[in-house]
Length: 281
View (cartoon, rainbow, N blue to C red):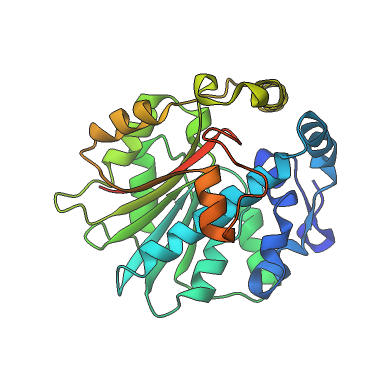
């Protein structure tokens, strides 16, 4: 791995996603941050994914745009809150939230068991020093370790919290997901969650099957684990076990129309094989 002075060279799914969504980071702190990352180790995998389906980059970009849209909607519901970005990876979402909502934040906690030291070094290089943004090293499925690490970093479980749970449910078991969510549940549903999940093949249009199956094959080969998929019914059943209050659920055609006012790439339910959901717990 190269030093951050020469650019951080990384091989991870987090870097793959960033490589394909760089247009989100063309200004502000995000642009400064990305200038210190070397994506050469994931360019081959990105090319493989792109050859499997020309919409690969569009799916990732729309997913990230919609996550940010939902974050914005939920941030505006509270005058003062915390943000926990679980499995944060390399995405500088915390920087962008701090930049866009400086008056509404008690703290931002970027949590992962990888890349946090490197991320912290890059933040120093770009002279970002807001103490409210903390990098927390923890396994988000180990709830005792997670909460101990968050509390040590200043997290207050009594304050309203927005939890971003992006790009992880595909790789963990259902019980691990429920266990992690339960540590953030409050009796008055004081906390909100934004996340996405992969749709089960039965809910994907037949024309998309070859593309999605090939993309799954490449992902599973590179990460070494099975990718999990869900129907919306299954996801809602899981959330009912948390007594969650659903804010909204969006397939990619709905998200594309909401954000762009038209459907250019995604037209039918299941196109793109991703759905996003926001809920209160």
